[in-house]
Amino acid sequence: MFKKILVANRGEIAVRVIRTAREMGISTVAVYSDLDRNALHVRLADEAFSLGGTTAAESYLNVGKILNAIRLSGADAVHPGYGFYSENADFARAIEELGVTFIGPPPGAIEIMGDKISSRIAATKAGVNGVPGTVEVLKSPQEVIDFGNEHGWPVAIKAAYGGGGRGMRVVADAQSAVEALESAQREALSAFGRDESYLEKYLTWPRHIEMQIICDAYGNSIWLGERDCSCQRRHQKLIEESPAPGLSQETRNAMGEAAIRVARACGYQNAGTVEFLYQDGEFYFLEMNTRLQVEHPVTEMVTLLDLVELQIKVAAKEPLSFSQADVKTYGHAIECRINAEDPSEGRFIPSPGKITKFATPSGFGTRLDAGYVVGDVVSQYYDNLVAKLIVWGKDRESARKRMLRALGETEIAGIATTIPAQLKFLAHPVFIEAGHSTRWVEEGAGLEDLIIKTELKTQDSDQDVVSRSLLAEVNGKRVEVKLLIPSDLVSSTNSGTQSTPFKRGTASKQRSQTLGSSRGGSGKISVPMQGTIVKILVSVGDKVEQGSTVCILEAMKMENAILADKSGEITEVRVSPGDAVGTGDVILVIS
Ligand code: MV4
Image (tube, rainbow, N blue to C red; front, side, top):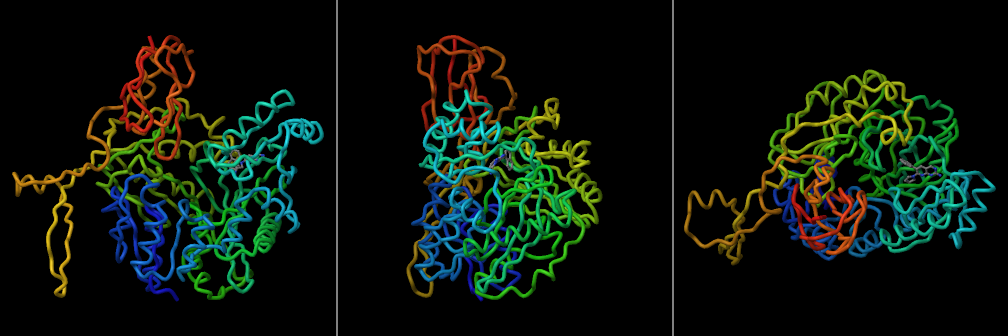
C-alpha cells in the first residue's frame, strides 16, 4: 500500500481524498496556490507545498511545479481528483516515469475515451449502441444534410475532442447545416485546439443516466449502480440521484453490463463512469468519464462503498475483494451541488466572495462535503462549487424531504448560492414525479420569478498579508523562513516597520449588486459580477444594436456575454482584455 499520497487538486475533492487516505493510515500532501495558502484542504493535509500563482493555470495546472512538489514530498502516489489532471494522459505518464503511481486509469484508456469518435468505435465493437450516428470525421455540410434526410431531424454535430456541450450544435433542418457546422468547428477549435466533428441523431427529451464502474488490475470489473443527472443547466449539474427513478431492474442490469463491456474494450482500470442517454425505454452510450466524478457520493450512499478507498486499493494493485453479486443498494440518495451563483430569474450568475456565515446541516442520513468553512473566500479564479449536500433516505420521497429539511438548515451569507433554486426544484411537481429531462431547468422549471434579495459583499474582501523574512537554524542548518502575517496583526502590534504588502485578490470594494441593472438602457454598460475581461468586441466609434454582445467576461470558469442595453455608438471603452473588474464597474459607454 502507498505511504504518502499527493492530492493534485483543491477544494472539496481534495478534502474528500485526504479524509479517506487518513482513514487508511496513508499520509497526505496538499498543494496550494497563493490564494489557497490557508484553504481547508491545506489545513487538513499532513503536509503542503506552495505552487505560487493565483489562477489555476499559474498554480494547479503548472505541470513543472506539481512535478516538483511530487519529487520534494516523496509521495508514492498522486490522486488527481476531478478536473485539472484527472483526464490528462500525458500527466499520468509523466508521473509514472517518476516511479509514482497515478490513482486513475491507464493513460491509453484515457486517450481512447477522450476522443469521442474512438470511444464510439470502442463501444460499438463491444456491442454497445451509441446514439445512431457516424464514426468518421465530418468533411462537408452536405453530410449533415444527407444524415438528417435519412435519419430525421434534428441532428447533433459534436466535437470529437469536445465535452460539456462545447463544440456541439443542434441542427433543426437542412438550411441550418452550413452555419451550424462552421460555428461548431469554430467553438471546438477555440476551446480544444482541434475541430474534428461527427454526427448523431439528436434526442429531444432524454434523461442523463450514468453508470459507476470499478475495475482492478486483474480483470475484475464491477458496476455499482447508476446516477440520474438530468437536473442540470447548461451542462452544469445541479441535483443528482441514485437510483434513477423509474428505471427497471432489467434495464439497470443491461446498462451495468453494457458499461462493463465498454470498460473492457479500452483496458480500463480504476473508477470510471459510462454515460448514457435514456429515452423511451432505450439507452444509448454517450461517453465515458475516466475519473472520479463530482457526484460519486450518491453512489457511495446507496452502496455503502467508499469509492476513493477502492480507487486507492486498485491503484495499489490490490484485487477487488467483492464480486458483482455482493453489490447491493439500499434506499435512495440525492446530492445538491451548492455553487456560489445567484440563480435569480434562472440566470445563475457567479457570486464569488467571502463566506461570512456558514450554518451547516447535519442529522441522520445527511452528509456535507465542503471545500470551505466560514471566513474562507470563494475566488473568482476557481470553480464555483462550495459544497455538496448529500442525503440518504429509505426511498426517493424520504430522501427528497430530507434534502428539503437539510437545505433549510443550511445558511450561507456573503455569497449567493444555488440553494434557493434547488429548494424550488425539489418542491416542483415535475421533479417529485421525476418527469424532468435534461432540458427541464432551462425550459420548464419556472425560475423566472425567483428573485434573491441579498446584500452581497461582492468583492474578495480578503485580508492583506505582509511578508517577513527571518533567519532560523534547524538542527544547525541555516534556513531563511518567510512569514506571511495578516496585516491587521502587524499594524496593531508592530506599526511603523517596513513591510511588503501582498494583495490577495482584487481591491476590497463593497457594493450591493443590482442584477439586471444593465438592462436599464442607460448605455453605461457595467459588469454584473466580479471577473476578468477576456475579449472586447467593439471599439470607440462602432455602432451597436441593443442586445448584441459587446464584451466577454470570464468568472469562475464560465464565459459570460455582456450585452448592449441600447442601440447607439460606442463612445468610451474603459477596460482591456486581462483587466480584473468588480461588480458594477462600468466597462464601456454607448451614447
Ligand atoms: C446529446 C443530446 C441529445 N441527443 N446527444 C450534452 C453534452 C454532452 N455530454 C452530450 N450532450 C448531449 N448529447 C444526442 N444525440 C443531449 C445532450 C445534452 C445533455 C446530455 C447530458 C446531460 C445534460 C445535457 C443537456 C443538454 C443536452
